Length: 79
View 1 (cartoon, rainbow, N blue to C red):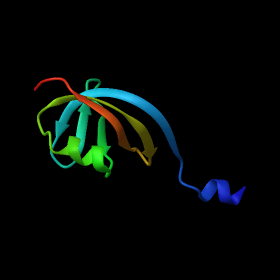
View 2: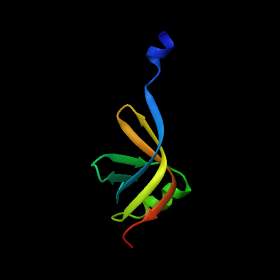
View 3: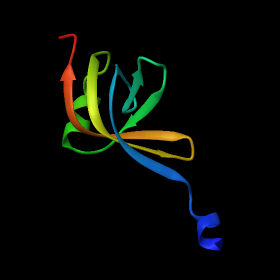
View 4: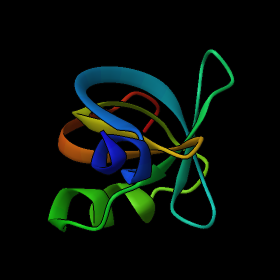
């Protein structure tokens, strides 16, 4: 029981979000939520597209009020 109380709460779900890439490796989704872009090859590619609207599919992890998406697939909507 003590281990459960001391373990930080987090969840991981696969999601698809549409939003605008912002500076500092973040994306602001259409619903206003802000996600940190995870550090992997595709995430690094997306992070360089500041100002672009993209559709991301990936694993979203929420921990202590912060959301991170590990990008598995992406599509740029406004090139």
